Amino acid sequence: MASARRAERRAREKNLRRAQKKSVHRAHEERVRGALSEDAPAADAPSFVRGFAWVHLAYLLALPALGLPTLFREGSIGPAIVTAWLPIVVYVLFLFQGYRLNAKPSRALLVALAVPGQLGALTWLTDGDVAHFFYESAVVEVGTIVGALFVAMAVARPSGVWGAALLALLPLAWIPYATPLVHSFRDWSLLSRGLFLTSVGSAFFATTRNIVGAAMRYNATKKEQTVAFEFGSDGARDGIDDATVKPLTGKPGELRRFVFFVLALVGLGLAVALVAGGDTALE
View (cartoon, one colour):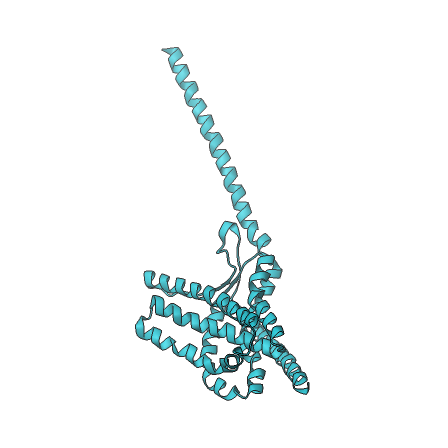
């Protein structure tokens, strides 16, 4: 009996030591994972990406104004101003709600410069200038957002059929702004048309996916959803944080500084566009 009790006691002590070792090992693993997750935002969201995100967001917001010199040159600025203010307001409000960029510098540059790169090549192939590049970029960026908003609302219908029909006014109101580009499209080469349609598709489908996802979440939860425009976002997958910038954070002076930054970018861009347009006219 005594030997049996000693054997049982030794077995219990052995099991207890084994459980303690497992507990210590598990706690160590949790501390390591916690340390990695805390270090990940600092390591994977460098200041370069965050600064680049602010510059890219300001560029997107400045585009509608930067396209005006070409509209003035084509003699269609009047009808565009009369109707285009509505899609531009919606475009600006959506961008102010949220912007998310992949935290990896190489991917951030790739996804943010993909559409401008295609449009830059298009401008070069069609013998355009800086003013044409700004104009074509504005047509694509604003047009794809309001077009994607209408398609998403028509598919998910969180605001009903009449709400989706009302949003159809946005693409229609953008037509006068895009008219000069539509008229010149038939004179482009096959390669130029392919580049333009690829840039439109790249911007349109990514934006539509974001808005449809938000509309589906609203239908499921009936709670207000914020659409953050994602450029190569991983969704904080694998411990990687995206660089998220949002002008409307409520921090003192942040919005004022950003508005001044956008206005300065508009002024610089308009000056470059006007000079380029003047040189083209002299030639």
